[in-house]
Image 1 (cartoon, rainbow, N blue to C red):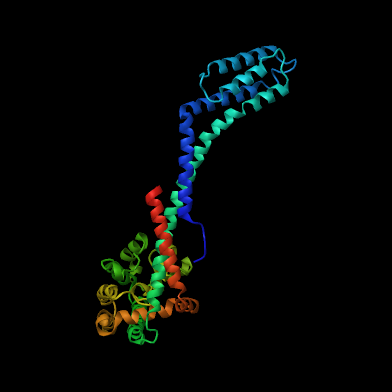
Image 2: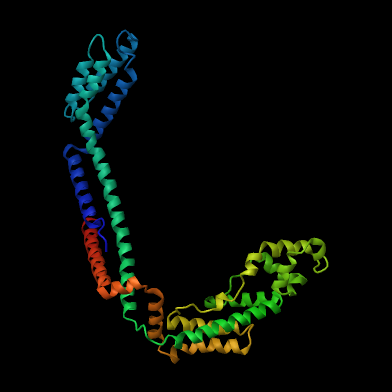
Length: 371
């Protein structure tokens, strides 16, 4: 596994930075530092507002208001306030009969010690944000490691599969069933009325592992109530392409058909046998047993005995072959590429798994201690 950020170290460092920042604030007192911040903001606001007005031969009334406001600000400060001397020195600079722009600049520079105290609060705020970010990233990284560890364990398990096992003993019955049920559904969909097809679709909702997508309410209502619902779905789709004058010879309400069928053409075209087929590689034996039982119930509603028998054979398949061993072989053949097989052979996967587990342990320890 390639080297990356050490999230445990990041969290530790962020925690220490926060402790240091809080200690620095506590050393001077948060309320006193906030008073410094308020005074600094008021002082710089006065300097900004009156710079140019109370200088040179400017507005004398503005000059007087400015000096009085600045004196009042300094006199109201607590005697033991950090950086009080900086405010007093700035006041002395401004206590002149005439002020120039350089006096305003000198006063701003004189207030720099107050800015340094204010920075303690800003640093504490930044440290808190950094600490929360480090915690969030550490937890996210732990979730990523959980997924990576699970993936690597799966690779190891698949690497132990017997790649020469006769998976055809598993695949042939599944392929036979899939082919049979596709043909049966295609025949049913082509020959039965849309109303009968929808009734099978509706009945399948009682079997979550073998359910078709439910039809939209308006097309379902159309098929159930209009005479055209007795026509097969391919016929309805053809009708939807007819001109209104031509369609008038086939259905009672051409507008209703064009609106309902045309709007839901995609649903009708995609109403195929996919919900009834079994994927490859196949699911677990337990899942297949449960699903095949539901498939038998749904397939029996529209198909001939051959398709129903193929579904029943699926249900018995976990008992008639070495199912899990063959399934692992199928998964290994499907999922492991050449590079992964080489990494398994070299031991790289095992090394990556060890590294991922160790990193997760470090993060767990950091979260326990610092979060």
